[in-house]
Amino acid sequence: QVQLVEAGGGLVQTGGSLRLSCAASGLTLSSYAMGWFRQAPGKEREYVAAINWSGTYTPYQDSVKGRFTISKDNAKNILYLQMNSLKPEDTAVYYCAARSSSIHSIDRADYDYWGQGTQVTVSS
Image (cartoon, rainbow, N blue to C red; front, side, top):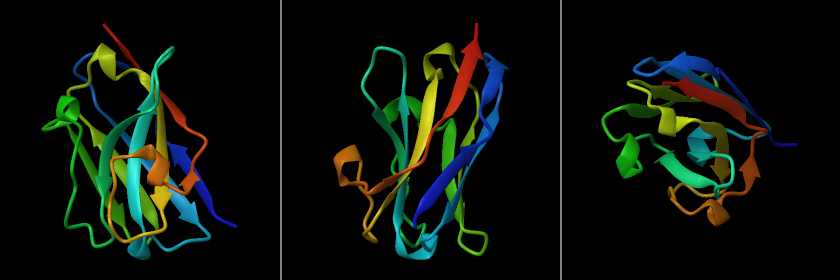
């Protein structure tokens, strides 16, 4: 049974940093493309960042480029999202997702497994 468990969310001031983690069980990160998505109140879930199976390709949503970094530790089977220079508009529930493919995708419909989400709140 596949399980993705996010952690690391919280309340932070504008300009602060957080590191989200997503511990995976029931699958091997080295064989899956992974992604981070977020959903703000009243909005649709949107793509944030993705990483292919080898970790060599990491496309980002334009609004987070240069501030967020996606990475993974295949030995520990954990996906990360380092978030720096946080802004109030980054406030959302953040979800990690796994795709049964080695190729990344920015489309949430392409992902097969989802975590329960972790709340990130950035105060102004």
